[in-house]
Length: 483
Ligand SMILES: [Fe+2]
Image: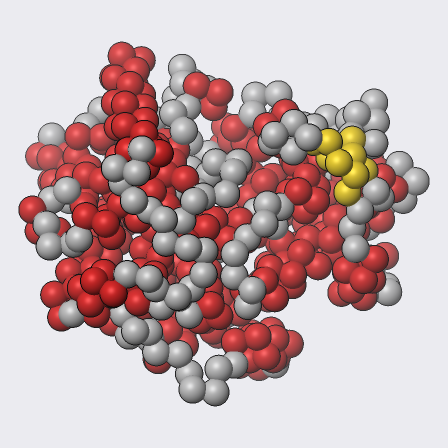
């Protein structure tokens, strides 16, 4: 009892959310409160009572906010805000981990664990380095690194009686949790306009539409990098399969998706969902960051090609021209660009026959679970979650198992290269970044150092990645934030 009180005390303003596990009545109250507060906020945005217009370019148009952010008070306050958020995240994940160990119930959020949040922080630093948003806009790193706070509470509320289809939109929970932190007396000095930029960016991040401010679009540009490339396929597999009672991994044999993909919301199969995102990515801001996005797009195509390769005839449609229905219900034809497909082919290499192995469902489960749990801070999967995953693997035929094995192996290799690139971004931020940048990088450095074997980066295994990073990120004058 005493220990539980001490644990809860560490959660500061978040205590009230983590007092007890899921029950229908409190969850209903939480849902109503989340809807009310976020509806009111968005109404104020629409009515212009809250102004989040700041253009979609990296230049700052608000000298007053820049002045505050650049001041000693601004720097100190934002740095302590970051440190508090990071402490809260760490403590709340530890609480979930502890309860998961005791109850053997899956509570650590799959695909949105501490590792995922570290990846978000690394992507924020990469975007910062490449785009150099000016003045207060550089503070977008805060909502980018913490836009998924609500996933922690979502994990705490996981329960058989609370299926995935019943969950409160996690962006609303992120909004509540960040709003509670920002509303404390100690952050009174932060200008209301800046708080509103943070809150709007967090609330708007997961909508199927683009946000209406620079910060929200920057958050989305970074967040979406976790949906494509090698990180994206593992996250899709884990999220779609582990949380869906009737999980399907591949393409239904009925050729349901051979000619047309419906809106993403109506796709409940993991690989077709990944294909949809490769085809239907919304337009992101950031012309320099677009070079990194294109790299990941090529990797996404290589991963889909690996899947396709086991059964070329049956899977020919995966990269072929196809109709695509967008969130506004408009259907258009989509074609992958031939140059990108060629680049993906050469990335995959000529001789990849060795990736096409026929593994048993159990062997395939072991490979996938090992990769999902490999990075430091990744959620551990309970026996029950693994059993659920296994049952969806058992339903695959031999061709699909071969495809999935190839995909997992190619994506696993590319994922490790991406982690090396992320580590270099974080290390550079620690060396040449300012106080706030270092405050974002510091707590994530350990996770990346633990995840990436040091000899990979130094021995030449990571040489290609280092060269790629140097090409992309080289800035002769280094990068010093004006924050
Ligand atoms: Fe999210």
